[in-house]
Image (tube, helix red, strand yellow):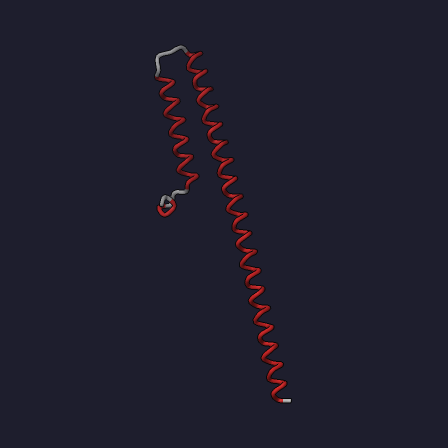
Length: 105
């Protein structure tokens, strides 16, 4: 549904991620606490975001690989079915030609 409006899942995720980072950064900067604590929280939040992004990327790669494997498998099945159909057509044609030659001769 989002892709129909020109948004890909990747752009939506990255927008969400960026919004989360900005929001977390603002919350940390505006919170009344020592600079050392703020820096530690910013570092922790950045690491969490990095981990989540890496997990998302890994999942996306796995889904893409699975989809490609299925597509290749389907292509091979269709190719095999088409080859069999062509061979069956050739055999039927050759049988008809042989019948006509027998009837003529």
